[in-house]
Length: 610
Ligand SMILES: *[C@@H]1O[C@H](CO)[C@@H](O)[C@H](O)[C@H]1NC(C)=O
Ligand SMILES: *[C@@H]1O[C@H](CO)[C@@H](O)[C@H](O)[C@H]1NC(C)=O
Ligand SMILES: *[C@@H]1O[C@H](CO)[C@@H](O)[C@H](O)[C@H]1NC(C)=O
Ligand SMILES: *[C@@H]1O[C@H](CO)[C@@H](O)[C@H](O)[C@H]1NC(C)=O
Ligand SMILES: *[C@@H]1O[C@H](CO)[C@@H](O)[C@H](O)[C@H]1NC(C)=O
Ligand SMILES: *[C@@H]1O[C@H](CO)[C@@H](O)[C@H](O)[C@H]1NC(C)=O
Image 1 (cartoon, rainbow, N blue to C red):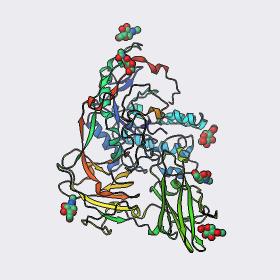
Image 2: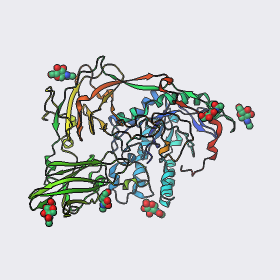
Image 3: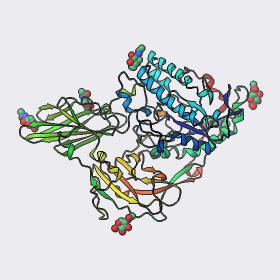
Image 4: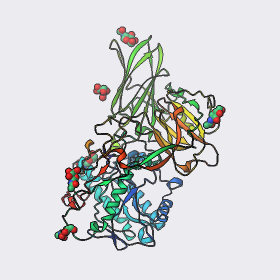
């Protein structure tokens, strides 16, 4: 659960600038910056969406990122992690940690604490060396070094001693970093957060988790921008009241109603006229090497867990086996898997596909399987769409065909159990190994300018070239019509796409009214202001302008379409923010009842670790 109402943020930026060294302190009312009590209004940027290895080059140049914040006149709140939740595979913890003996994530154990301290120290020292803390003249007013909603984990583990020892170790380790020599030392901060939920209805849990540029921009900046802007203005207008004087039970007017002129994103064709259709060429994914069990990397008489086998190097893991059969036979193939999706092939033909739905990751694939006389090949392709990032012991949540069973059952009841057959394994697809996404010369692309590309063909690569849209507005590619796969522009990953995954229909969709008590438990009834029910969960994918070549130089878009889709409907668009009048969206768009001075925090109960 929880990725929805646990927008776990890596970096929080706040407006209002810093010039020269700042003092950062706090009293019982507020953060005090250069002697002024302040309310910090903040947004978040997941700076790295980074690779698992420690990499500070290029996109991952963290020091440069903080310099930009400073130059823009903003403060920064540095959130180090290493566990950051963040809708990122394992919450940012690299899969290789799993291979260290004795490792338990986020509990009291030497291997985890050693790796965590190494990482934290590295980041803090990097920031100190570059003078990025406020006391050094830099933008960082606060550093959050520890954990994320650990109170929830303590509860899940019944306050297990290992959990409480770990969180105390975290606090000691954080103090040892001595960030407070440069920023401020805060024992306890109550952070009142206004959570921006995705406006998409019932988001598929396992959302794209490749570069932030892909999804986060679209996720965060839709109509709630308009709501939050107004709410923030109200909070700022109350800043003095909120951060000065003694606690006062009086109400700040019963309701403060903010009618919002909501800003909405408008996707525009990238040229004045409707864009010319893109010319596509295509290439089949080479499945042949995986249609036998002769070419695997290794064999095992066991069906292995996927993440520990492929170490997050690819979404895909092949499981391949063979069996001898006397005469022809018609069977049903049953495969039990722990998700997230599965394709089955028998003797080179695709016979079935299934993916998990509604967060039900454990499922059974059932498909027909015709065997011939002699040797028969069964190949199973398991795919993941992101690794669990929340909850206690999430590293133990399996993926793939862990132990199966895998069975062939005939109509007459004859069963052939393949679970303990000799299985051969390969991580990744042939096209991934050959890095087709980089568009190296020598690939046999077919059909360019012939106007003929196959549609609804699974396991197909598509390629087109396009001119960068003029202007400075953000660029998106509309992938409606495509099914499920991944996209690259000039070799840069745009992430996974899955426009065929529709958001669930839900009651109350399209009605937007924030007036309610905050529900810390965050169950389904916590969802507010849903839109897009029954529609593709996402069809527009951000193409950062820094990925694009300008001045008429051609750009290349490559798609890997895994499930079968239609690329001919794809189009580039630019994004404009347009302000609409609230009334035109009905009178439901209201934020009301900000009963600010009610003092419900006074009734807050919870451990300091919360
Ligand atoms: C705490 O939970 C972890 C993970 O389940 C377990 O390994 C450990 O034995 C537990 N410790 C105690 C004291 O219950
Ligand atoms: C609380 O605030 C209200 C409104 O500003 C004021 O009338 C009242 O005197 C205050 N009460 C105390 C105890 O300060
Ligand atoms: C405040 O909002 C509630 C909930 O909509 C409403 O019932 C009440 O009448 C409002 N009070 C005032 C003074 O407008
Ligand atoms: C049962 O069905 C399988 C699959 O069609 C077939 O190969 C096998 O010969 C059958 N066995 C018997 C005893 O009929
Ligand atoms: C395999 O899946 C089926 C269907 O969900 C289920 O009934 C069966 O118990 C599962 N088998 C095992 C061993 O988990
Ligand atoms: C697509 O190919 C046709 C035929 O070669 C050409 O006329 C057209 O300009 C091309 N369109 C684009 C967008 O490149």
